[in-house]
Length: 115
Length: 112
Image (cartoon, rainbow over all chains, first blue to last red; front, side):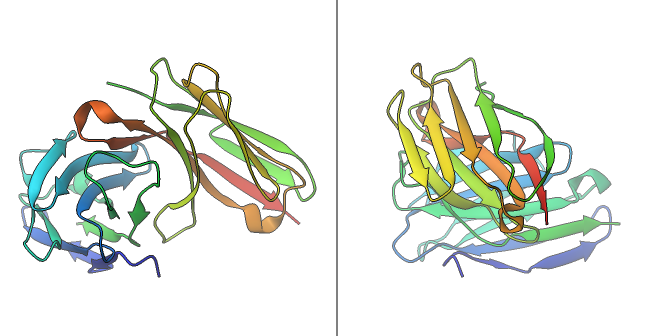
């Protein structure tokens, strides 16, 4: 157990639907990062939050949004889902906001399948 | 956009062999990290290298950061089946809040 909790572990939904992925960071970590992992793209950075505020953005689609709540848990919302959105979605956390040499702690991921 | 290229993408070897995985970029990173990922799990940090030319050892794994901090290598001595997994290098991009940029990964299979 890494200390980063992601739910649900698996999600199957239809095209056009909306889903919410949830992440609880490791205790004491203020930063949350969302990554998408697919076979052809590898691990792609989506977005980072630090202590409730958006800190950095990657190639996140407009159909996707995220937020970090006062208790530091984070949610990634994916809407108008397409087949190509099928992937593993990882949440990671770290103590600091300005990057760290101590690495990220990753959750076990949510496998999203869009049918 | 900073990119990291890993080679080889796939590696299948016999137990006891040595191997080296390379991670290259045209950009300078403040630090470089290596992760190992097993199926169904998230990446797990193996090591962070910060100083150009730095070498770190983790049992049979040796990590090196290039002098110019643009490249890194992972060398495994006497590979074991338990080393099987996806090895990812990741560079820390401080230009935007310190996000990690990952390479595509090297899928290592060590056969008994």
